Length: 572
Ligand SMILES: O=C(O)c1ccc[n+]([C@@H]2O[C@H](COP(=O)([O-])O)[C@@H](O)[C@H]2O)c1
Ligand SMILES: Cc1cc2nc[nH]c2cc1C
Image 1: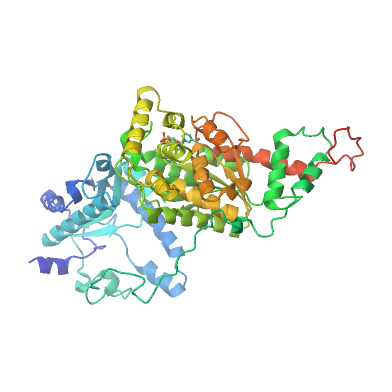
Image 2: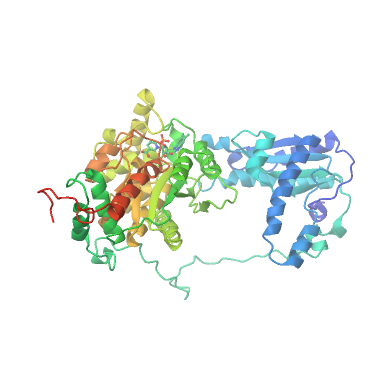
């Protein structure tokens, strides 16, 4: 009887050393294969582990993470109780089973995954339950080990990139029935609720009728209003100019460094400004448009590079270390679930945008959420004592999004806005242009700013726009990187032109379109090094020049203090 099996099924951590016959395993895996899979994606994959060496390596991963979990427990009695629990039987169980799903099924059109890619993961969970019940019926059992560093786990099993494991399952003959209850309940850790928790929803929720009205969220700023002026901002331009001109140098001879010193002094409201705790934030997200062959690299590079940032091995890590800039990564919408990491801020809106070839990349609500989440990042940065924030991005396909936004918002010919991105040239570049043109031709929405931002945007681009707006509200110095970041700035600027005074455009990217965009914005970049990497690399490289501008303003002698004769051209 099914009900008896459901009652008997246990998450098992205690096994006899009796081997699992092949026929038992085969029957259980066939039961897994009979489970529902969304849109018949058939993405569930199984790996069998019999090797003692592999089991030992998995056990070590478990031990390391379990130790971490122990550290999180605050009270000693609870810690001791936790330590007494046996949470796995990796080396005791005769067999290990790794249940995974294959993300590459998403490379083709699939049914049922449009709202969330998580559905393929859920299908694998259905298979797991079938296997569990089949093993129970055959008087065997299984134990789910989920406390693992999945990055390492994939590495030691040498799983292909697109294969995502849900856990390691210990399989064998149970050595106990835990008195017919979950082991955690038997040991008094926690009781299972007595009955399913069910609520009937009989009407569509409306905040107005509920008597529990949600206060309206105030916009990040009020475009075009005089409230945009930062309170207390001191008009010190003339004084700064005088200080710069009195330094021991021919008038204007420090060129652009003089403009930077002036701007930094103005933004930070000081004749002796100090750059405090500079921070670089890389916003990362995936793009539905990336599935249409518009990039030279596959989508998974986004998450691989995020892991590279977290591991300290990317160009931006190297440059930030060199120039003593703190680095954080924001998961704004990467198509992946990252392990917890102190340098990762999870502001995931969804696992990638929808392809704007078929409809809006994001909803109006998601756009607002992006602006809000970006603003939150900057609030936290300032609360930590920083007054200078640089923005970088990572997202396969994001030059496509940025190019269309530039075209739509600046009314410039598309060809001038589309470039090679990660390296598409020749026919592929032609194809990228055609796909983007098709998306534009199909667009039937409003030509107002926000609908355009939502339809063609990316989660990282819009979170950066929100972050720039908040940094301006907080009177911070804002460093903008290459082409994609400048498009994020363009969106922010269209919402509040006052952002311009706080922004330094750190470099002119080699991406075709950036030069044109900077000209359109009447902006001059600090560097031109033919970079087209993104990540915020331009910001990190320009930083020592900005610091040098501040240093000459603060530390250089004046004609008077050094007793040097002025030429006839001194302005003051
Ligand atoms: O910052 C730039 O100017 C820049 C120019 C070209 C490419 N990129 C990077 O390349 C990725 C987007 O390129 P693509 O070809 O995938 O659209 C994304 O991760 C960006 O960080 C960045
Ligand atoms: C390898 C790689 C690194 C990147 N960094 C930013 N965008 C990138 C795109 C690629 C492909």
